[in-house]
Amino acid sequence: MNEFSIVCRVLGTLFNRPPQDPLLVPLFTLIQEGKLAEHWPLEQDELLARLQQDADPQALAADYAALFVGSECRVSPFRSDYEAGEEAEVRAFLTERGMPLGDAPCDHIGSLLLAASWLEDQSQEDEVAAQTTLFDEFLMPWCGRFLGKVEAHATTSFYRTLAIISREAIQCMSDELAEAEGNDEQ
Image (cartoon, rainbow, N blue to C red; front, side, top):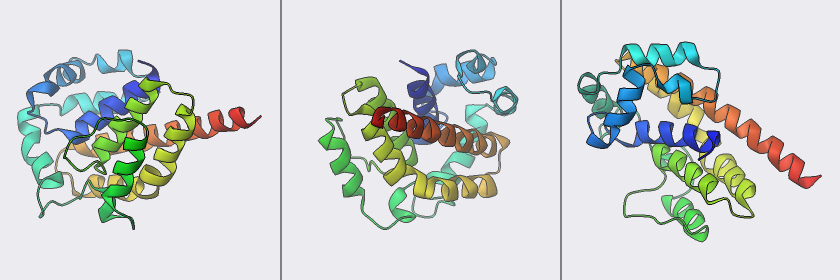
């Protein structure tokens, strides 16, 4: 698993699952012990230290639920609530690339980041083109608004910091994809 995949997997998982989910125990342990920075490829040590200070999954549960869960959530995590287009477009794009999908909507911010990780891990011939399409069409047009709302509505510093880390990481990865695609065209 390369750096791009790690970043997408960590961020996607933190947005996709409630903090008290048993599958997140290893990730929260890394964060709490300050060891995520050892594996984090981006220069975000100060932000990761801030994330560590407020990384108690039980204390974060109410904020996560209020932010992202249910029809009355403060911040919709779904692309279809920010952009014209349907979840079916994302589903068709990912299915076309062979990604196994369940019944859950796949236009969730966490699902899209996890899909970017999956595309990277599959390393097919059109990997950069597929990732670029995912970022350019299905992630970048709305994630800034989403992350701004998370910063504005989160009651814990953990989710405000996660939004900042995510904004910087997503922009960095998008720039990296644009550079890789430019190199492919030469």
